[in-house]
Structure formats: C-alpha cells, structure tokens
Picture 1 (spheres, helix red, strand yellow):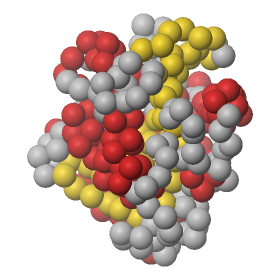
Picture 2 (cartoon, helix red, strand yellow):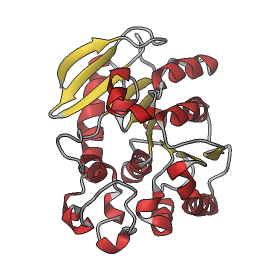
Picture 3 (cartoon, one colour):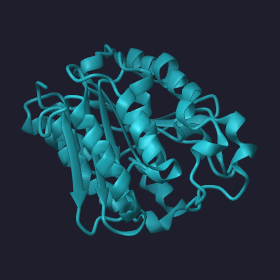
Picture 4 (cartoon, one colour):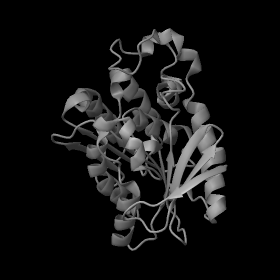
Length: 285
C-alpha cells in the first residue's frame, strides 16, 4: 500500500486517505477510533473525491457516502463505519477495464449469456473480452489485500456481520456478486441500479438463486424510473420475486425500492445512500 495524499471532505471529520495498491487507487476514511462497521464501495472515484467528477460531468455529484454514514451512525447510536472506496481501472488504461472487473464472471462466461444491446458498455465483439473477465480477481484483492491492509493500519478488526459492499450500475451487479462469492466476508449487499440488461432475466435468476440463504445476510436493491434505470424493471421484478421466494423478508433483511424520476446518476444514488446505510446499520435480521 503506497500513500498518495490526504484531503478533506466537507461534513466529514479528519481526513480522507488516498492510497494505491499496485495500479489501483483507493480512498478511505475512518473515524478516529474505528468501530465494527466497514462499507466497501465499487466505483470509488465517485464516492468521496469531488475532483474526480470533472471526468464525468454528467454525473454531477459524489455519493456523499461518508457524510451519510456519519449521520446515520449517530442516529443509530453507533460509531461511524469505515468507508473504503475502490476505484476501477481507469478508462485511459483500458476502456473495457470496468466492464471486465464488474461483470459477474461465473454467470457471463459465454457469448450466449450476453444480451445483444450493449447500452454503450462496449463497442467490440463479446468474444474479444470473455477470457479477460476479472471480477473474481478483484474480489480476491478486496478480501485478501485491500480491506485487510487498510483495517490493519487503522487498528480495526474485520467483522463479517458488520461488513457491507455497495455499488451502482455495473458496480451494483458487482456488489451482489461480491457477496455471492465471499458470503463469509461480506454479509450485506447494497446494490443501486443493478445493470441487469447485460444478461437480462437469466442473469437476475442466476444471481438471486445463488445469493446466500437468509439468516445472516441482507440485500438492498433499488432503481429509478428514468433513462437506463427504466430498462431494469422487468428483471428487477423477477429478482424481487425470486429472492422473496427463498425466504427474504421485505423491511427485515431485504429492501427493493423504486425512486420515481430517479436517474442513472451519482446524484440519484446519493439520494438512496442514507436509507441504504440505515437499513444496513440497524441491528437484527
């Protein structure tokens, strides 16, 4: 882990640390005396450092995740969670890097698994990148290196029942997949606008049937009604039906929410953050 810089975020005490693991950038924030909770975010460049938003000005805002975490922890009389924001491979290094890292690898390994419409994710033949999907490696890096090294530095133990993954769009799929792959590391998935359209209903079915059994885990899923998010309705409805059929109970260990007029943007996802964190931090299943 190589230290890069420290910077401040309005509404967050102390400073955010920017570090690098090999070629991967990570921002993290922790309270002065860390508690039990840890939330790990995909698309970390959108979470805390507003200087990154100029790269994608249409996104308009950061997620303000740490600010929301501080408020919700106080509401629940808890120490604020450590927030670990893991950047995807920069587009300038590999314009398909994010797609490769966030695609649920074991469900999308054949051309037939992919829907024809790419919605701007790629402009090449699917076969050209199928053998280079790397979500499993990223999850391994998260659980074996990135999170353990950061928490060790700040003197925080990793407690699975208090550890969550969060992400949106392709990162939303990657969030659910992370919990499927490492159910004893992450006990909660907070997935905003999961991008079902890469694999359609078949992908939603595979992931919901492979999500951990109810009892120890929590799942949040949400979508808007504008733009790309409007395309998720059918597969999201199927996902809701399947996960409930396995014993997950709404408002207990499951939330599936629709935000009317919600768009596919950081600004919309920031609106979900407070409620999603509250769902996670509340005790009990």
